[in-house]
Amino acid sequence: MKKEQILLFILAAIQFAHIVDFMIMMPLGPQLMRLFEINPSQFGMLVSSYTFSAGIFGFAGAFFIDKFDRKTLLLYTFLGFTLGTFACAFAPNYVLLLSARIFTGAFGGVLGALVLSIVGDAIPHERRGRAMGIVMASFSVASVFGVPFSLYIASVWTWHAPFIFLGAIGVVISIFIWLYIPSMRAHMRDKSEARPHPLQVLKNVRDNKNQQWALLFTVLIMLSQFSIIPFLSPYMVANVGFSEMQLSYIYMFGGLATIFTSPWVGKLADKYGKMKIFTIFMILNAIPIIVITHMGITPLIYALLISTFFFVTSNGRMIPSMALITSAVKPKNRGGFMSINSSVQQLASGLASFIAGLIIVESTSGELINYNLIGYGSIVLLVISLFVVRKLQVVDEEAIVDLNQEVPSQNTALEKSI
Figure 1: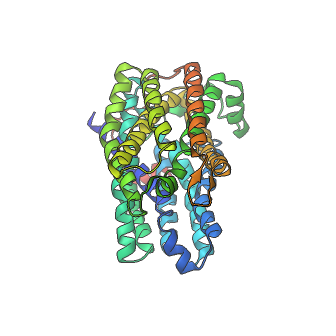
Figure 2 (figure 1 turned 90 degrees about the horizontal axis):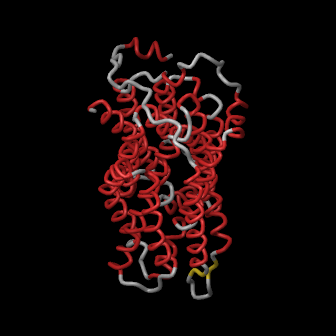
Figure 3 (figure 1 turned 45 degrees about the vertical axis):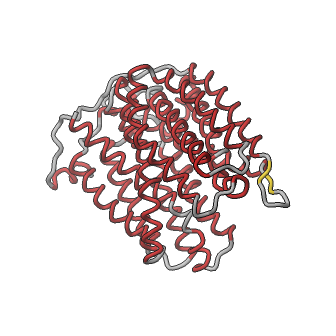
């Protein structure tokens, strides 16, 4: 169990670095627009370039991710991500920063799939919910500590500082990956058939109804969640009465709450069943969605209680969802499928934001209109997902990686991985 905890800690640290690297760009907008003399559209490219790059290369990762030792691929992918983060830190102009964001996103898109694949390979189904809770708590830590601290050092020094900070963390995490994560080749042990041609990965999805249901389930979850989240902050300022400075409270309190609730939800999912816990949190999540999207001028405390409940219930339905999805595919195909799933997540979240942006309009008084329609649509998607999730079948319950094996700590480890 101790080695399992170390593995989950390292994976959570990887997710922390990945999430902060993506999130920090948005609040750095005013500095970057002023220093690089760019317009909002150009800044939007800085933000979206990472997402689209992650989606494209996450999809490409499906063609090779299952052909390598998980540890080897994780190490080199994270080193590439760390190099991209340092490139962002030292980019002298807009064009090079944009290029660095695309480069970093390319590795970030594969990282997400690798982390989930490793959890699926190393943790048996009966403990996978708890494991997902621990790994996904990294989002909470990123919200409570990572982003505020990065903003603080950016204000004290310069916008370069957060990326130098993340790059330094990346170096430390890379060392931990090399020293403490064992070789993971069990998904490659089935020699009864040759390694599939890249197009075979897509054919596997085409011919496997369970994988298709899992991808549809992912799309529904992401469309529902990311039609609400991008406009939460603007709506709170324009309609609810928040100041821009008070917006940080939403993510701070929401993130702080989910730090404690994520492991708890994971344990509940393992004890009572992933599908049951998903259903409960899906129903609970509908409450803050309806309230938030209909909210007018509201006292700060009440609004923060509702937004925190939204973060807790949204996170609560994601944990059992990810545990179910990783169990819906056999280990030998898991990496490729999770790469496609990761790509679908990125593209679905972008599509959700785009559609919501077409529906929401600004009134002459500056208020945002039609956010309530987004809320209704999100509820409809959640209800549909409740039917789709019941189509999923768990086809893998056992761990295939022995975490008790010795991890080579000398140079031979790197030589063997190469």
